[in-house]
Amino acid sequence: MKEKEVILTVDGLKKLEDELEYLKSVKRIEVAERIRQAIAFGDISENSEYEDAKNEQAFTEGRILTLEKMLRNAKVIDDENIGTEVVSIGSMVLLKDLEFGDEFEYTIVGSAEADPAANKISNESPVGKAILGLPKNSIVEVEVPAGQLKYQIIDILKKD
Image 1 (cartoon, helix red, strand yellow):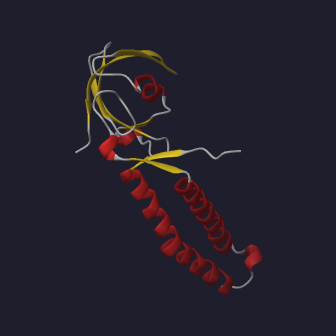
Image 2: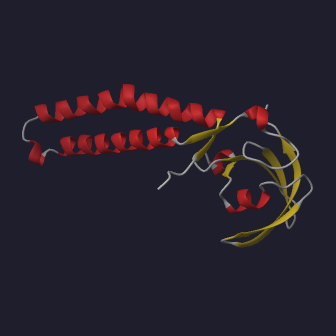
Image 3: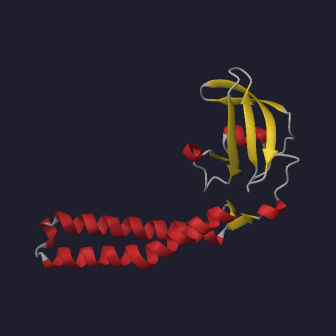
C-alpha cells in the first residue's frame, strides 16, 4: 500500500523539521532524565512519576515516527509555482460570504498544516476542496455540517 503524500508549503516543511529536531535533540534527553530520576526514587511498580515519564516517552517516540513518515512522504509546494489565476495549495484567498457579506482571508494548505485559528485551511476541507482550481469571481456553494454556505472568490493572492 502506497503511503499518503503529505503536501506542505516551504514554511510547513521547516516547522515539521524543526519540531523533529527538537524532539530528537532536546525532548528525548529530558524524558530519559525524568525516567532515570523516577527509577532513583526506588520501587517503580508504585511510582506515578515513572509511569508519567514512560507515557511521555511513548508519546514523544510516536510523534518522532509520525514526523519522520510525514517528511519522507512530503511534497513541497514551491512559492514560485503558486499562481494567482486559480486557487491552488499555497494560495491566499479572499472569500466573501454571500449570505452575510463577511469577508475572510484563508491560505490553502495541505492537511498536515491546517490551522483554522491561523486562517490556514486544508485543501481537503469542505471549503478548500470546493474552491480549489477556481478563478477569481467564482461563486461556490459549500456543503458543511451546519448546512450550505455560498462564497464568492474576491481575490487570489500570493504570500509576500
